[in-house]
Every structure is written in C-alpha cells, then in structure tokens.
Length: 146
Image (cartoon, rainbow, N blue to C red; front, side, top):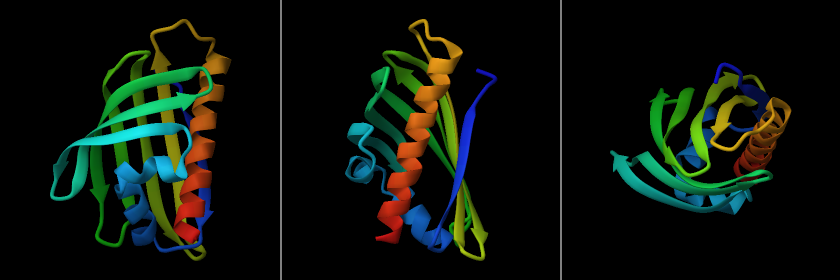
C-alpha cells in the first residue's frame, strides 16, 4: 500500500473546533453520508480508540474496525490517524487528518490509503479513496462552519 490519496481544505474555524467534530466519531453519519453506521467500541479518556464503521463509498462497501491515534495538542493542532484492525472487503486502510492553524482558520489535510481483498484496478481504488476524502472534507467543513 505504498500509494495514498491526499487532499486539503481550509475551514474557517480554529483547530480546536475542527478537532471537536472529528473527535465526535459516533456522529460521523450525520455529516458524512459514506458512513451508514458507527459504533465506538473502546475509549481512553473520552478519545475513541477502536471504532466499527459501516461504509458505502462507490465500489467499497464494508463493515470494518479502525484503531485511532490522537497525536494532538490542546489547541487542536496535530494528527489524528487510524489503521485497520479488521474488515470484510478491506484488507488495509490507513489514514489521517492533519490539522494546522492558518490565518483563515484551520488547514485540514486528509490522507488515505485503502486496499481491498477484491481485485481492483489502481485507478478505481484511487477514485474510491478520493470519493471518501472529498465527502469527509466537505461534510467536515459544513459541520464545523454551521
């Protein structure tokens, strides 16, 4: 899984406000239609550690569990990353949100690499990754700025 897909956007809010929305993992289906169900399995001091998702993103439809890492500062800057614990169709998923304070608010960079058990052309995989990223960034922006 050497290749990954990445996109960035600037959200007109401080990093702490953006992080609050990202940290509310159970609410993802309310702002990201790619997720049809989310269940937080374990937490540490209020931060989700393991989370089960039901995803329907174009050719990728799966129920899977992610392990989260929260390397963030009190001001909300830093990196939220995740990796696949188990999945049905997915055999690997590594991703991250990087939050950086900028004059206009917060730059959010979403990086994602997905590998499926099904044979999938690289272009199809990258298109699915881009669809997931675009939906997440648009939904995150809308949720934070509303």
